[in-house]
Image (tube, rainbow, N blue to C red; front, side):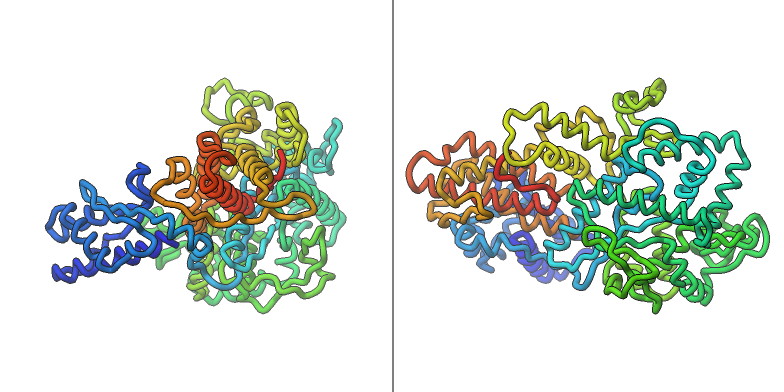
Length: 638
């Protein structure tokens, strides 16, 4: 990648200046290569001269000019760069020689980022199997699936897990509701029936303490797995999981394996993990106090503090200690998660067996066969920010067991939850008199937008706005629009979901990208650059020969954005940030549409037509890569 190579050369020049001054490299100094805000300032820029001013006791411009001389002496301008400029107050700007770039565009278009080797296990979705999925779950799935696509394109072997919590409180609540409440009304899907049942039983709990005790009994029976209640729970979970997989498939989201929590217990993974943990000083049984009888993982510190009822010098030092086994013997979610992660990294001798579940998806099953799942070098968990503490406890357990390398390769991709705009919340019957800026979804209250319902509403919106019915179906366009909407935000952003805004098809939307891609294909077909139909791809036209200095601004801006693709990929891989690909693809499409409007592609001198047709082809190829990473279709027609 151009920016990475440039960064190395700048570091060499900086090191030489520091050596000449007899000064060591400042610990806080980082050489950053950025993109200038103004197009006239070239393609890359660095402010390192300003950062060195205090250390070298010279003006930034003096350092910039000296560094420029060092780089010119190293002859980097004789390669990909046509010009290096020192600009006040101390920037170094670099302009690409587009003739050189065009001659070597395949080299610069190939991803060359340094990624870790070995298998990466990505866990995402992991919805409680007690009701239909809502848009908050879908954001998780879209992020996880896009990360899998991103890392696959970067050359990693990727295995996708969906963890099914079939022993949790939520499934127990739904089972209690099925057995002890009456849910009326028509429901197209079983998950929708359970959605209402789950909300209803949580209302009934408030005035029925005995029903809450029934939940404890159901939890025990689900874990034991042999009673009629356990069978009801198992059948309920399986039916809902099948519906959830069907919902996700509409958005291009798939999985390699479903790992059922019940199998972690049944296959003895927790027992093995328990034995390992007992050998550490961080895991102990509480003998007195309110947690008496519980097995606890200590969060930090030497003493056991509050967990054992002993006053701690620091009141906050131990309040985050985590109960893994309750006094009644029931395992917490985190306990099973620790065992699961030991297995993910291949650190347990115990293993699962598997049966086919649906459409190439395998599932842990007692009657299955051995398969090479797990044993990852890196593990990525896509879970919202509210699960930061349980994720930290899993990492702590790995460290306490001596698996520090694996703990370092356990990555939590945290993201902001999805809430509802006041207008959307009100349409769902939520009391919005408090005047808040957003309203949380709540499964217990039955408040939320189901994935299937959102897709239906979006499909109707797309259908009503289409002038032609060619290419993709309205349902496919709707799914792409929703997926892009949930991916375009920074991961830590809380998405305030507004139904009206989400169904827009203009502006920064997935539909805008699809139209740009289809428009480019139409231009290339008219130019005779290839053939459509019969699965034949458009062929790359000849690489043009032209004067790089004669590029018109829209041509240069589009070419520059195309050149930034590989480093955008690299940044997205390093940061695990799908939104970077969204921002890149939207900017690329904007620049193409500007180029399309300002520069007649199929008219003018032959050399201009040749260049613009090739630029159109290169745009389409590059946007196609971005669409593939984002899990969006690349349509010939719209």
